[in-house]
Image 1 (tube, rainbow, N blue to C red):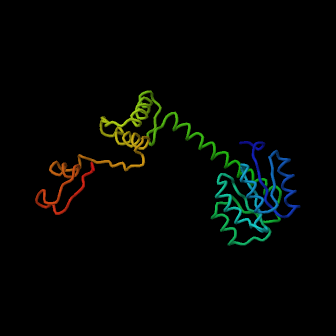
Image 2: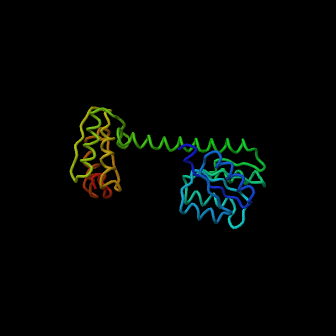
Image 3: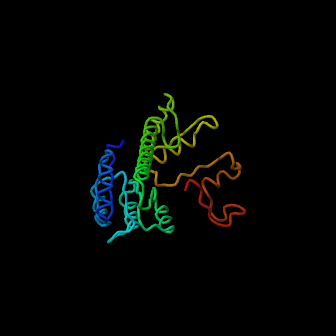
Length: 235
């Protein structure tokens, strides 16, 4: 996402400020749209995607804080910069808590707002690039929490995908620490049972005398100390 393919929305009820920002940003190569109040801004984001919005705080119909809330709801990927001539500490804190990237007080220097916009879009570019790379790595080299790209682990990923689609019992073998539980979780959560609980059991930590009771449960009175029914883990 470079300058020339960044879409910016200016939301300000003052015609002079709106036109000034529009001309300035267009000269810098941005694609710019404008809204005269908060209500029009909401209509704009219903039909268009914006990388960044510059929103005035004091506006009729919907103030800037309400517009910011709507952006969070309807266009959460849009970075929002708030501007106002009526700065207050409380309003600034509220805007930042709601996710505004920055808060600029009028009158501002041209270089100041240009720098804030540049940094905001650079941050957006990095976030999108990181997301793209993570998805690419997950697709090529990862499966759930298992990371790897060797031919052997790629074969394991392929096997997990095939097995997760089948209604069969699966035996996973391997030395201690090789990730057997990770494979089991990957099979479970990528299959048709992903909405059901995944219950790992460390059988080595259960005494042999209690193994049957823990796994299969028991009925009240089945043995001394069986004071009530107990459901087993297999149930």
